[in-house]
Image (cartoon, rainbow, N blue to C red; front, top):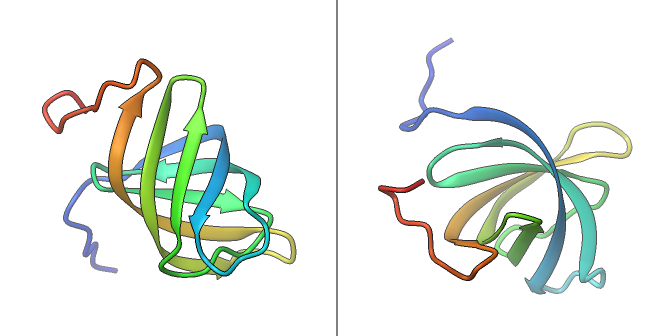
Length: 102
């Protein structure tokens, strides 16, 4: 199988809170886990489906990511894999993380 990714992907297991900031989804906040990340994206695992194109905010004690949902696929009967294109990464002090630092 050929790897078509333009950036390396790294595994993770970081619990997060996901805020859906724009979509038709009725659930505005849910728990999730960052399962992997690259320089430009994050793969979340959640218990609920999030609509493609939704603007979301992903928060945990050290940082906050804003981004757009690129895809949402059912992994198991209770779990979804959600691909997120990163718009901005902020430290908890509110400082943007640049590509040179990240």
